[in-house]
Amino acid sequence: MGLKTIEFIENKQEKGWPFANSEYFASGEYKIHYRIDAAKGKEKGKMFMIHGFGCNTTFYDELVEEYTKKGYRTVRVDLPDFGFSTREINEIAYKPRVDMLVELMDYLDSLENNPDKWIVVGHSMGGSVTLDIADLDLDKVKAYMLYAPMFMFNVPKLLSKIFRMKWMGIMMDTALKYVLPYDALVKAVLLIATMSPRYIAKYDASLAADSLKVKDTGKGLCYMSSKASHPAYEDMKKIKAPVLLVWGGLDLFVPKSKVKKLSESLPDSTEIHTIPLAGHCLIQNFSKKSAKYGMNFIKTNNL
Image 1 (tube, one colour):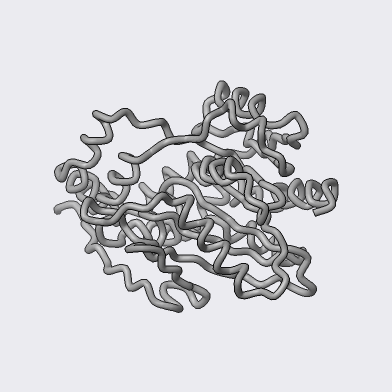
Image 2 (tube, one colour):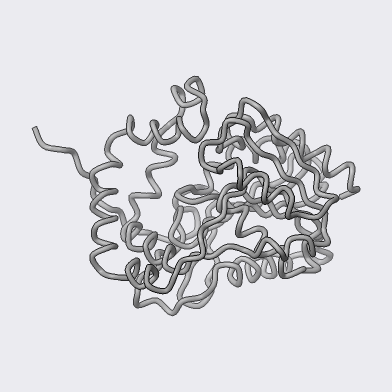
């Protein structure tokens, strides 16, 4: 009996697909997938949420539920090559992801008469992207929330060229083709990320796997890795807006040395918390605790 494989799906990129609240923002040759969840009751503010490596907008499901019921409108966005946004391949007219995210925020602001400023939320690699945005010192942003931020490495030129080679993309697509049919393998990775067997036992693996079945995901991940970089630690003290930083005590993805270095690199006013029993994906199975820290941060800083 042979191994099961998946057939890659076309990225439809149209309103209402794959979720009822799916929207697409065009920027150059890219289409960025995003979802808006309205505040329940009177709106108190708005959040712009950026996911981590290999993730998609569903990884914020629990945290969105917590913040919307507390009066915050949330906009969660898929980075290029992830979720249901455009896959980058060698033929694309490249555009930096931070530029597109800022354009999306500008566009959404243009739809309002008196737009409030954003609270930008980043998890894992999305935390690194959030700090890239913080480095721009945008007037449209009033605070940053970092949940288990994890930096990509600054890719050397030679390695960048290797990532862009055709065989690398084919190899990555092939690996996905043989891994994704097996829910047990997907859940094994998520178990390491959450450190919660109880949560993963009830988790629908398709939430994580379906977006990885989009055509050219492997090629896109290689292309994205060829452009990888992270913000400079020495620039972080310059961040003017309030910053919340929440770590998981059982995080196996971010080394303790990196936790210490980033914690010490941010402004002295940064509010820092650790959830002792949480893993890397603390925004999922520790969403209530994560949101509690967020709401206290908002009240403390009069946001």
